[in-house]
Image (tube, rainbow, N blue to C red):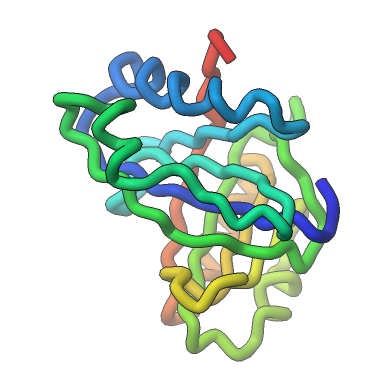
Length: 183
């Protein structure tokens, strides 16, 4: 991924389980396969409380302004399915990029910080052992000012979450990578 890539995050509000949702999502993802980097689908961990059951990440070159997950696309990919598609926004990386969980790391935590966040360095200085992706809103229409994606083991995640609970203005949700077998 180049520094000139924009990462688009799309949230899906649904009560569908993975077995019903993933095949419909895969139909959309297939049209993105010509890209060097395939879309990534994340599923909310049980016990996490957020409106998005699934989040997908899509990487596009900065020069490409096209974003095809529109309301008209929803009808084609999630026809007659109770799925609300929410474009969280396009974000530019401001930190190291880790895209896959390592074998010794079994959790991914996505932290959404508001536009009022004035100390993004705080999220890098949290105690514990983790890898971190940091994203800053690229478009003014993004729903959050920053997104932070932590990779750590379960014990490390617990430490991170306990630290984040003391900070206001952030949403933190544990997601796991979905296995999309047909992509």
